[in-house]
Image 1 (cartoon, helix red, strand yellow):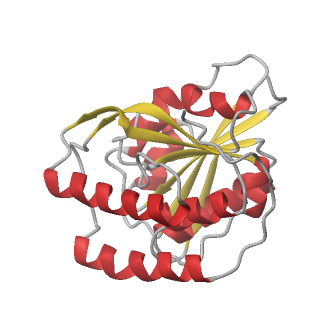
Image 2 (tube, rainbow, N blue to C red):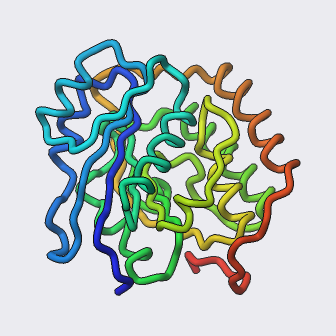
Length: 246
């Protein structure tokens, strides 16, 4: 196993006071005797009880944006903060309780085994409960677009559950504040980092409301993908060309 002393799990949050406490309490803290697990919340301009609920549930760090900047900005802050706090592995999980926090050990195992630098929890390799057709089709569309651009197979390009080793924390770039899902994977894979997908269990939220509309999402994400792909990136890692999920 690759030597890992600290894992920091960070949760980008915007008014998730109804769900974030349960997510934090589900995060395994003692899955390996030699690994310290810490929890960090990135408050993207919350106006509800997210802070009080997070700290009461056991968050170790609480970092606030003074205004709502967007999910891409929150993930950027999370990865930068995990790196500065000495994390060997950073895990990002949505705060809405749709993703299985108790499956984090499975998500990071390929990084511990040095089989990957970056892992994504794949809903479509695992099980999905309650996803509406329009969301499923949107996921298929953006995932297929990433497959075509990267010339490799990806099953779930929009996952809100991901893990990063220290090198990817250091070298990642998220070029716009609105979202991160597509541009982050495009950026890391183009730089030569090994990406793998891990099957997870996914259940659509039962509390709270999504603030994302398809029209706004499409209008921000497509230009972001275009801008990421047209800018040159420096190849940082060189590995044989193969699909780590094969």
